[in-house]
Length: 333
Image 1 (tube, rainbow, N blue to C red):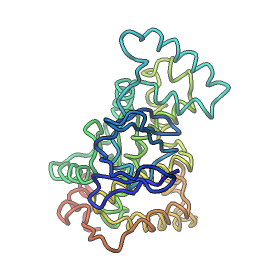
Image 2: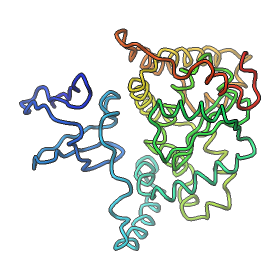
Image 3: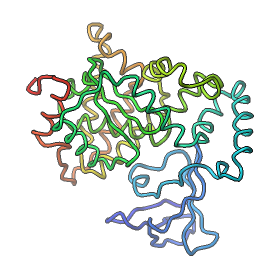
């Protein structure tokens, strides 16, 4: 299989090996052809028969430059809505016996509008804990802009001492103030936020809910148990594969924003050491239970650091103070 090599300016790429025509080719000329939990395929405009396929998640430095897959799914056109509904019912029934295979597929078949409604209801259930100040909101927006947050992603800070962050269906992301106060720099928060954006992009939250609730979630009336689903997702344990995929996405975002990945590596290392300390176990329980820690995760962020890049802090000192004081915390702590 030929290797894809990005150009220095990130606008083009060449193919190296396996007898492939080397190019160069423009990333802008790639056209998404297929997108599943296991692969992403692209055609090239003006080149019939040309096709390139990435298995699993593409490397971070390539994924950030690939065009996004088309929203929705062709099954959900107006002409085939009834057929799509029948297909969803069949797939949901099969999920009873194929729980390891169908959740990723179902998560991608549910329309984005439905997932957004679910996410808004779940986050609204936590609305009493939301923090907001003009300066803090501006700092959060600046951080999101650095990480190239999608327009349909909403980020909030919640007043709670737990060290945690979570991505809900439909692009709802929350950071808990305990995590913000425990961070040693805005670059650490940038790494965690980019990781959660990876969970959003891969629809891991929706997949986790389907895996745990199946037909009850899809057809049992979501609004009747919003609180239960919200609590379950906050404590859901993502697989190591999902964590690695979100980490790869985060590394790509940090590289694009020229934010050093080393503070995120230091945060993971610090959390791992605190997790081994019985005195810290209760405080870290929510993060460790939903984001499994491993040495490989810390090593991946550390290895992605480029000595030749001049990294820029994710926020200014004033913005960092504003973010830390959003929930009434002590910014100087």
